[in-house]
Structures are given as structure tokens and as C-alpha cells.
Amino acid sequence: MRSAFLRRSVALSTLLLCCASASFAANDWYAGIGVTGADVGLDESRPGLSVGVGRVWSLPGLPLDLGFAGEYVQKAGNQSRLFYPSDGTPAVGDEEIRLHYLQPAVSLGYTWARLPVAPRLYLGAAMALKLSESWTRPVEDGQEVLFYDDYDLSLQFGVTFSLARVGLDLRWSHGVINQLNEIETEFPSEKSVDPLPGVDAAEDGAKISHWSAGVFYRF
Image (cartoon, rainbow, N blue to C red; front, side, top):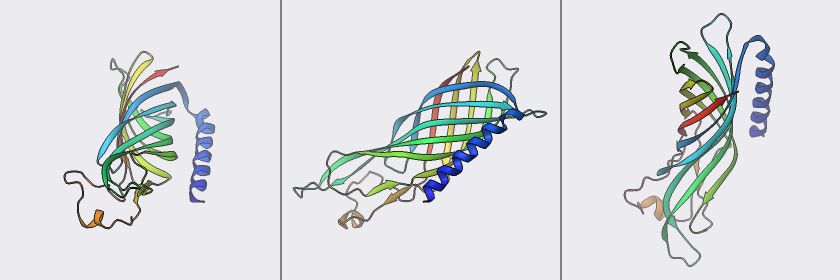
């Protein structure tokens, strides 16, 4: 119920923002693609993909602009743990998580238009709506001990560099809502003794932060 309400709220906000665009001086649309690296609360990070479209409007009478983007974003990580296969012999293996998000975002920026690469510094916020959560495991032991929430809200800081119609976007984001949840298993030894010395355990209640680097084309 809560997830459905959030999706309707985001859709309404997007519609209102698009309707308000008539009051701004229109700039070019853009489309971009990039790579991401995320801290999802697991032992290691894994690269992901981001694809999106957006637009930036100049604010009349101000040296600032308002940006809106809609993105598909992957956030991935890897965790080493003990697996308990059907034969009863514990085995060490890696499980990889890949989170798929639809991510609308807004930003407020300032562009140094007189410089050769027209850098734009921006601050913003994004609502990440989880489309799916896929785990890859070496052994299916029936112990799905970790899962992630269906939505997240993140703060963003980034900079873009443009040359003609091509540009580079560098961004860092940090979530403000706890994402990673851990289910208690029937194997208490995992809690009482560290089964994998030197490997960081999954961080229950972790917030997700990630960076992204991509290229875009204005049209």
C-alpha cells in the first residue's frame, strides 16, 4: 500500500513539473548513459548501468537553472557467506545482488557558460523506485537472508562538462532511508562466531550511496 502511494505521488509530481515548464525558458533535452558503483551494505561493490533522459530550464531573472531527469539505474554488490546446501555440508561462496531502479530526479544548478567546457554544478534529490531485485548464488540453500526496501530517497551532488552537444556527467548520491534488511536464519553459529575472518558482514539497515560517471548528448 505504501509503495503504491509513493508511485502515485511521484507520477503526480512529474506531471506537475512538466506542466510548469511553460513558465521557464526552454533549453535542450538530453539523453545519457553511464556506469555506476554503489555501496549497498555488502562486502564488495559491483559496477552497474545507468540510462536516462532529462531537461534543464533556465530560471528567469536568476543565474540558476532547474533540471529534471528520469533514469533507469542499476546498483550492485557482492557478499561472501556460508551456504548450506541440501547435503548438509557448509560451503563458502559469493552471492551478488543487482538492484534495478526507476529514478526520477530534480536538481538546482549553476552553469559557468563563459568557460570553454561550460561546467554546471548542481545539487538535487532523487526518488528511487525498485523495479526488481535479483540475486545470483552458487548454491540455492533456501536461506534468502537479505533483501532491500522497495523505495529510497537520495541527495545528489554533481558536475557536468559540455562541449558543443556532447557532455560528461559526474555524480555522487547518498540515500537517507535504511535499505538493507536481514532475516534471522536457523543457523545461530553465523551470529556467534565469525565464519569468514577478513570479510565484512552485510550491514543490516545500511543506506545506499553510489557514484556515477556518464556521457550525454543534447538535442
